[in-house]
Image 1 (cartoon, one colour):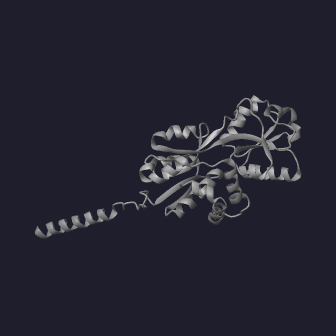
Image 2 (image 1 turned 180 degrees about the vertical axis):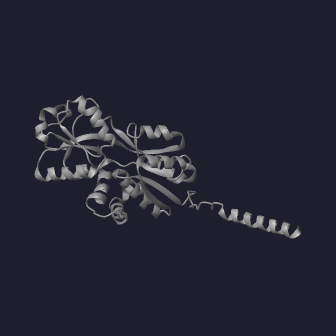
Image 3 (image 1 turned 45 degrees about the horizontal axis):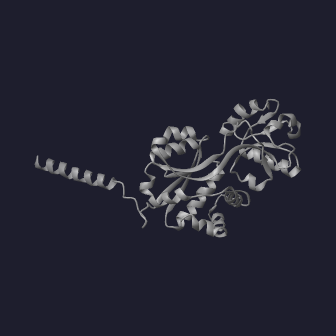
Length: 295
């Protein structure tokens, strides 16, 4: 009986030690009080978010953080922010594009700052096209091969054009061709090279505005919504775990020219996916601006 009791005590002690060994380690912190490890979630295929996230990864890594970028689709990113699996995301479009996600997860995520107020959905044409407004497109459809070139069928922009723009401006006679953003950009490139008119669905900010001579067609009926803002959101306790980064995010601003310059360097002039050296060179070329972000 005594030996059995000793075995039970010994087994319990081993179990307690095992449990102690499984306890989560305390997060490593920097001298400024921030946790060292930070995960930025990046929306797949949203170039402005890729550029802003890569920029801040380079800035924060240089200051001693260990930043990881994790790519995912929009819905999983919001879910991950709400559970703390991701620390922040830099590409929240408000008040329209991501309104439903913010409404759904609003109690479990935190707004950290607005870095651009010029975002919008558009139908764009080559700058020398003979029209300036969506009200003129139906009457001049033959100038654009009776086609509007769209992006992914499930995109919010595609839905807005189908449900709002086409009926509002009588564009039912044009083919609305959807497939992918890459296919749209390929057709835009071909039309530009051949000097042909083209109408495409697009959004600002996008690097295409820095690479092609484009103009947005006026939308007097407001079918594509008003200008939107680009915002940084984090997990609910972000400011507790990263008080300094939270302050930097609250002051972060980047205008379209700066963003297009960075996007062009990363996504147009460079054909790879290892953006680190490209971003470092852009930082060197824009050092005064970059330094101001963390003053």
